[in-house]
Image (tube, rainbow, N blue to C red; front, side, top):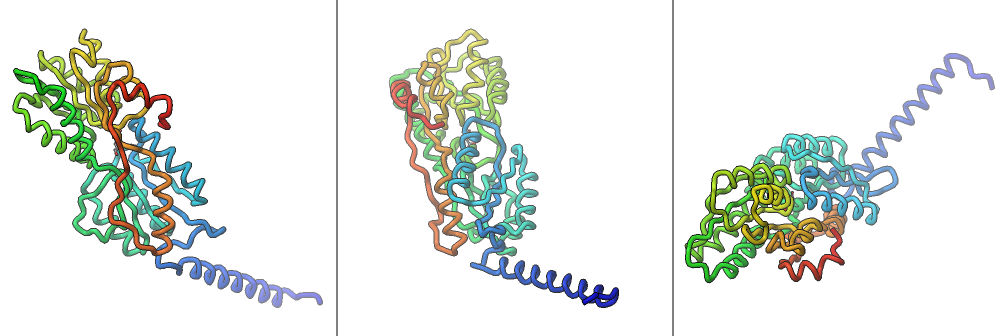
Length: 335
Ligand code: GZL
């Protein structure tokens, strides 16, 4: 049968309309499932939007690797964004995830405050949010399903308790300088708090200078140089992460002092380079903070997508290291 122009046009129009209706129907069907805003990707995989702080430290690199590998292992499609340590980039990324109708959003908030508006947008879009690594200070706990990460106050406290023991026979002042993490971040706020509370038990222990090195080696080196210029007697450095401590090592050595002896160094994380410095006697104590959150995060994503109840807070198991235990642990460290 020869199809004339008019009937051809009509048939084509009909075909296009049918295709459109089918696509819309499928689209609607995919978006209306277990109450989450997304409907998975075309082959039914869960789609996770993850906003990462940045790539500022060895810890962060290991954390990103853990998340990417675990997503692949779990068969979850990962949309990953690196915010280069800027909150506005994280907010933009979360809005993009909402637009893309991902199934779940997870992120490590670079700072504690300023998230309520964008988290409300995710909630209104019916997309569940999981906090990993760092917390937010939102009063409204319904803005996220759970928090997976460390107890930073405890890490600070353990660091302070080690120093209390280490200096218990000191008769005079013990001058401490502190390299804080990113200003306004949960790990910086909480580690500072835990450390200060612990050392309050010995009035000889005094924090004579405290400033942010932004969790980076460059930041740690630059601020330690200033500390050394301004303070003739420094006995202890407490750095909120290994990377700032490693940067500070350069400044201490350049100033003609022996790290680990003239200036005792306490850090947090226990990444490989930090553990090596500890084993080599350049650091004196490290409180571990595990970046290997990927597998637990993917389990939570599946549970949250399925509408299952999850605990409000899930803390990672961690330990501490001395120079001796670092030597023993180094060969088996995963990060
Ligand atoms: C802690 C994490 C911190 C690490 C730093 O969970 O947020 O950020 O201690 C990293 O090394 O930059």
